[in-house]
Structure formats: C-alpha cells, structure tokens
Length: 190
Image (tube, rainbow, N blue to C red; front, side):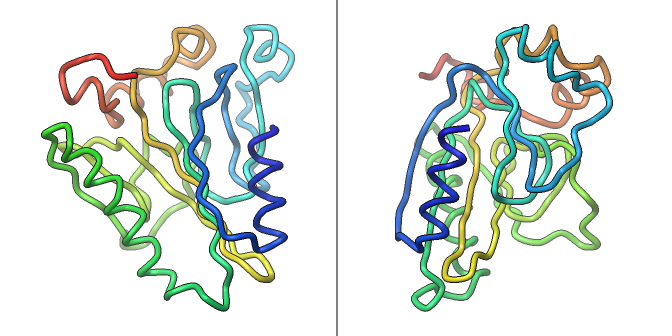
C-alpha cells in the first residue's frame, strides 16, 4: 500500500521519477477501481500473510512477491506520445530479457482488447512475452499533469503462499500462460 501511495503522490505532483521495487509481504494488486473476484476473501487472504492493494493504474490483478515492479512518472507537457513512451518501457524489458539470452517479444497493441482480469494470464497491450507466455505487463493512467506507468516483471515463480490461496483454475491459467524469467532462463534469479 505504501508503494501505491508513493506512486500516486508522485503522479499527482507530476514529479518526474523512475522507481524500481519489490514486495514484502507478497501481494495482489487490483487495477484502479477493479472489483475483487468472488474467491478473494480479504480476511482469509490477509491471515495467509498476503497483502491486497489497489493500484492507481488500470489493468488486471497483478501478483507480487517474486517480481520486480517499476513505476514511471512523466510530466505531461514534456511527455512524448504515449505510444512512444510505452514502446520504450516494453523494449527496456525486452532488452533485460536479452541480457539473460532470452528472446522476448513486446506487444504494444492487441486487436479488440478485452477487459483484463488477470494481468499474467491474458494478452493485453503493453506486455512482454517469452515463447508466447507473458513475463511482464504494464499499465498506465493519465493524471492532470502527468502520466503514471506501473509494471511488473515476473522474476521467479509465484510465492508458495499464492499456490495455497489461489483457485485451481487461476493456478492453471498462470502455469499455461505466464512464465518467470528464472524459469525461462533455466536458473534461479534474485
């Protein structure tokens, strides 16, 4: 919650910034104004040692605790076209994957984009894929004087606490459609 509050404050103040951070305890972040799914019982979730927060950006549910998150605030008067900004963001993740010998593909647009319920399980604009499986996703929101971009790169498989707390169908979708950078590279990454 603290990270989300920092990002929103920086965006409201239009403070140019790039922040890279991790999550402890593991958390689910809901997209801005996203309704939690029926299976997400907040008391049970928190009693499992997991956090639940709302992001100031859109997109679907993101899973944190084995990822690296990034937030970028760009003042609107000095911002390049949003398509250029998001291309740079996605290509940065592609280059990072390349440093581990992995060939990643950015996705900047998708035809007839549907509502995204789970970031890592659905094709969406502003994403990065390794062999057809999502490794990173980014969302944005326009504030009065700035753009806020938030994203997540899955570094390791999701924490074990998620496996116990997520419904089986969500676990199956994640196993089929998402991949951690360490899994794709064939070795542990920290």
